[in-house]
Length: 386
Image (tube, rainbow, N blue to C red):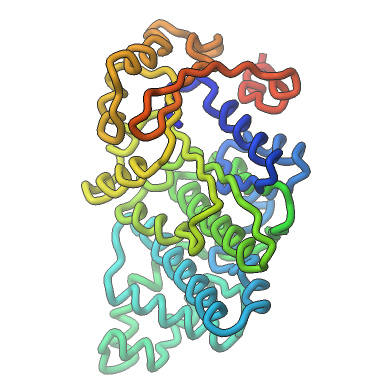
């Protein structure tokens, strides 16, 4: 879903979400940066977890509902789930260290993280290893870790692992302290109608904290969905990813890692809604490789919902879908002029073009009911200030 601010992207997303819940699906909103879905999720009888300092915590290495699912299955299915948990944990660790460092980690560091994680899980047999646990193991110079660095003694190992240890240390003692170094207090009931992780408490934090929280939330949501399938009570899911590219532009390589973190073993039964103001956001990603992978992610969407946007915005859009002259003219006719003042109703509010594959676009108009106007309101802060 793409369009200028003010066209009602959130309202249409919420209408879709409510409708699909009405048809029996579970709504999952992982990483609600603005907290704008919380009231709706609560109205649907769901659970809202506010994550941040002084609020609920989300441990990146927590297996979540997959830990319980692991106890209910045997044989090959149990091995598959165990590998899924390990892969997500390791991808998250790599992503968090990349965010802190603002650069890719080395192959040796990736192996060190994997070995240290295995040592922590093997010794404590816990579903909630902590980043401080991994940091402690890395600092002990265990034989398995020394062998990975090909160090001749403990002193040489510590010199080789110093950058990685200090990077993880910043997750525990630096600007991100208190966010990702605690046990999870978030709990997921796979039988609920709706779930949301509200990250609005982190709104004042820097981009690193927000990006890290979004990635952790996406991994948590993927675990919820996988557990929903594993426990035999399969319920189809609709999940919303707003501000998608905000998390991926912080450091190189996060596009690929986010794909690994959120990849589901059972692909059917999940409707994913990705919301953005502009595909130009892709061009802000750190490397050409990231930009190419992100364009691939965007092009794989089966349905595009387009609101009002300027002609220049259509250039990026045409890279992933074909637009007729008439379709382009319709979308640009809904765009706000340069003189439009925020706070007033957008001239294109409630007007959208639905594109699916090569089919002709379907223009629709959205009219909200009184209860929707109350629950979908994203301008409440302006009115309260007034």
